[in-house]
Image (cartoon, rainbow, N blue to C red):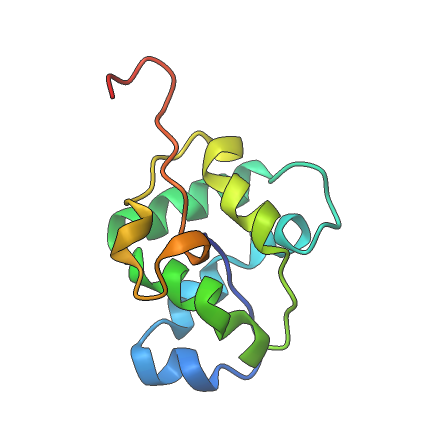
Length: 114
């Protein structure tokens, strides 16, 4: 998502869409979505849950290429696994304009009815 993403750098695309502060808040996820850590931290998961509640479209923006404009090269495969790794349910993939694999994957929480 997400995802994340998140970065305290030049945020040209994110500024125009209002996602800058949301992306910066996701900084704890950078090591995970870049492949530097094997699992997201608890602070990353907490921030992901906050973004999903408050502004999930910003996750789509990053996955649709916004992360590159922030100087961060994310691994989309890993980023799309983050909701499941964090046990955070995200909106359906179809809600992102890029559709397909460029959106946060929906990951139901254990015990949730589908």
